[in-house]
Image (cartoon, rainbow, N blue to C red; front, side, top):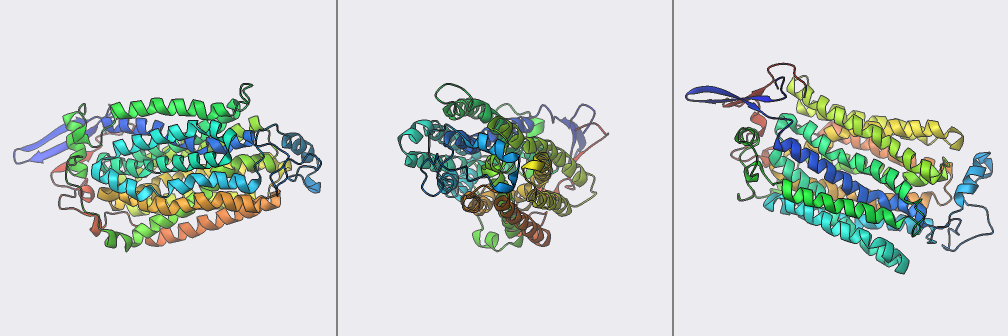
Length: 516
């Protein structure tokens, strides 16, 4: 990359060698990363806003066994040994929410999203790889928005409508990761994968931050009890993004009407010529499912999601029950770990590609190093969090912040490893791994709800122990079985991926130390 931020593209033929400057910052692939970053921001806004909205929606105190209001007993989440924290807890425990949903029902409502999410993963990957990810992503988000804006009306009519809306939202958002992986399989040159894809998927982190902070503020609006605006505002913003996606995103470089010829040639020579009109490759199901590297990704994906889904769906409750923060502080402090995680994940993407480009480490070794950072760190700090209480609330927030921050490294590890081992089947591959990784989303909130019936620190300690165990097991399997090169079952006749940048007819190199 030269000082203007362009790659030097050397195309050799029988007549000699010609060098070109391939745009980076002004390129269509970076534009795709920016638009998809915004897309995943809204994906996660609509996924988790219900978690914090429910803190505002549910009346407290209530009888945990029956769901009825209990006005005669002290809040069940206050224990005698909590000292001065009990005063804060008692004040926070009183809420004029509309609904008397007990803890088990709340866990069930949080899990219902994943009943729909799990069924669309593999079909979405197949359809996206065959027909292109653009329409799949857009359609999924459209039905998600429609279902989400119906939640306020549905909740006031009957709780079963909320359940149905959450299932439909799961179906809609279930297609987006396989669709996006399919797109990156056609758009991301090998030595740009980590930074392009990690930035794209870091939108999930900003979505966490945006949902947690804005939802807390919207809850305080003195119109219609405030919480319905969480769904209306996020739904309207997401619809505007869908329009942006439809008009400016295309399935492949060859399909893009405004891409420069040099950028299209660069991507196609790195990846192989692709077009949404080409005959899609036949998926080698048997060989794929017998592949140890695939099972390494599946295991890492499941274990990562257990920890992340536990925090995504339950962190606001932990902040309220154990650390005794009010709803305004709850929103900001629940978001703080994800703000740090976003910065760290973007840095990791840049560093991972630099390590591979300079050949300090192989792709396999790079993925394993970042996987270790992304799993060992959270395991240590979540274990430590389990020993905190409200008297040490800010130390608990610090531990959670560090632990969640370090999980950002996995965006340069297993999350991108799908494209390393099978770029032609990246959508299908992600559909397979994310189907398995949806199970934590179904079971984690229910298990957390069953464990934390009284919201005590001892109960939440068990929750963090379980997360730690998942992280360590997932890391062990990934270190043993993960690979960094395209697998034999995933190669095509014109597969150039692993020849780059050694292909005799193509060389893309930095000619100075210009910044990325």
